[in-house]
Image (tube, rainbow, N blue to C red; front, side, top):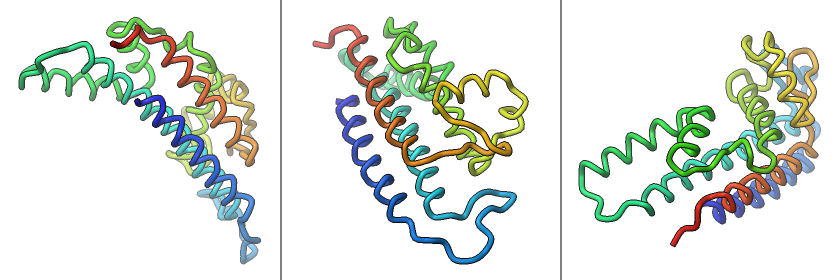
Length: 191
């Protein structure tokens, strides 16, 4: 269920934000770029769409983990429910935790799923948008690993800002969907 819901949300988000980016009006005013970020409606729509697409993939992965855990346990009492809640909190903390929990508890190596490499770059883009409005964080700016991951997502950086276009939304949605399908196919059969 989680995978299907995630795929549906990816398609709807892609439709919405690509339309919004294409319909973005010519901005008013002379200043389109500030120290904090862009104010061009097209850029705002693309950044918001990209952030949402990556978030949908993350939420789908987290939801699938819960689904798998609940499916493997019968007769849930209060103590077990609280332990499962703790597991859910820990596994959704970051991608390292997700990888660790999926490998340990569900015998799935997320890194072996199709398009995981792309997803790592997309996560870097999402982090730049979420934490610095499209500008690389200080940690990202000094990390060569970030540069390599961004290249895997076909995203370039101009003046420490991620350079996103509508095509990036399409690629992010397609790669996110491929990753979710691959993950879903990798989980042990659910009865």
